[in-house]
Length: 326
Image (cartoon, rainbow, N blue to C red; front, top):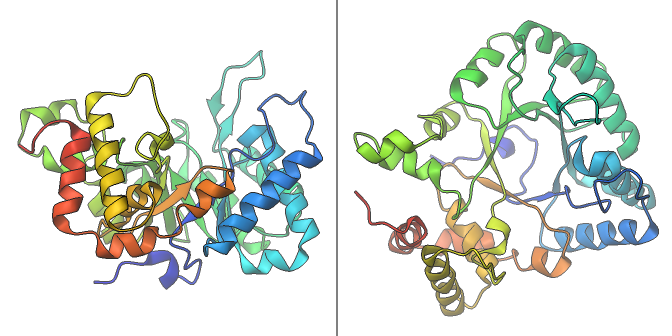
């Protein structure tokens, strides 16, 4: 079976997405957006487009709204770009304001004005995909359905998804939603490999320590929900970024990634992403860098995923785990 849910739905055929959390400078609202921030975003988008990335991932909280504002300036300077790309953003997190703590909010009263703010900052009339950012313990599916229906009928949002949710939470939401949930975004990488461990540890004592939702990978494939991976490059731990806290397993895996990259005449970034993309679920990595060189270094990921052997995939996994298979 060829697994490509977003393509099948006519949403996006981009195998990689660019995460825009780094756009706009610091998370301090006292630091204004400058021309250098806009130029940085332009260069990142230019690099992404040059390697075929047409999907861009935002959230209303990224640099406290400045990331979307900067991206909006990029769109303003290139009016034709909007119809060539897919824009995804997220709502549902309320950051601490010094009085109230950070919290989650899926109420209709929060979702609707949040989307209006996103559209205003981006300078666009619609979002291709809207995600609920993190599970709200007080969420009521019927109320969320009301908000989503209003957004869909108004033309403000075309598709809906979630982030960091379990099968039970997705089923709970979907029970009331008129439209299918098309995306679930999760932290996944060669470093954060508990999504693999959960399956390996069935009927193993080691499974008692797993915290990745049981059956989530299988559920999303069966329900035709696109799996997106945030943090897929693992902060560069396997592609040249030195870390004083690196474990022996991380150092050995970085060396192995480099070896495979050299043998294949490609980059370590491409190998790290290819390992994720080799999985039958057709995971879509959301690369979160603003560095044009690092973005371009991901160019070969699709090809490397296609040619990566089963033996290479498992060798990388066992190395990253630091322990042999059960």
